[in-house]
Image 1 (cartoon, rainbow, N blue to C red):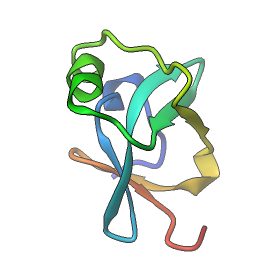
Image 2: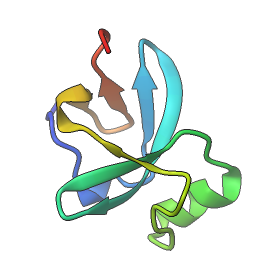
Image 3: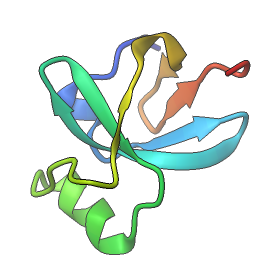
Image 4: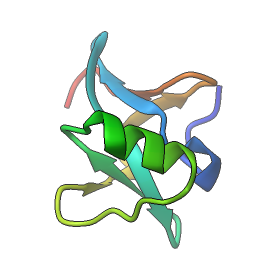
Amino acid sequence: MRDRVTESDVGKPVVHDGERVGKIVDHENGTAFVDPNPGVAETVAAKVGLEDHGKEAFPLQRELVDGVGDEEIRLETEL
């Protein structure tokens, strides 16, 4: 498991304390962007590379990432 989100992680869910809290929708210049309320269309678009981070996404601070796995991005338990 790694501790940095990369462009290949776009489309993965973001999980905090076992609960899904959003999805990585974009990655620009070393910053990942999280949409806290993605719909089905946004999820599919992100997986195929068609979505930018838009108005609903927020930059994910690196220090909040506990681990990056094959299936999800885990946030630190203590936020």
